[in-house]
Length: 69
Image (cartoon, one colour):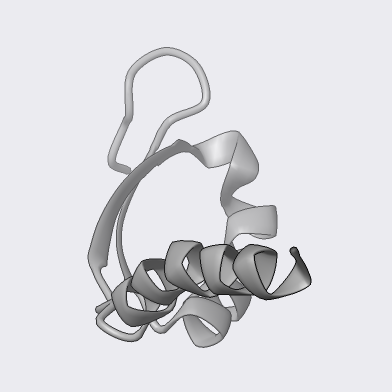
């Protein structure tokens, strides 16, 4: 019985293992409110380093219209 269960587990996990070896990094497009800028500037690089993904970021105003002075 244990032998059959072991073979079943191996057969079920093998495709998952093979699929996980072909994972590729992605370029993520992120749009965020200006209110989150401080946290994003700290956490964004940590996320990119940990996952291998790159972040293409657009930061906007927290409220109202963006004014360029």
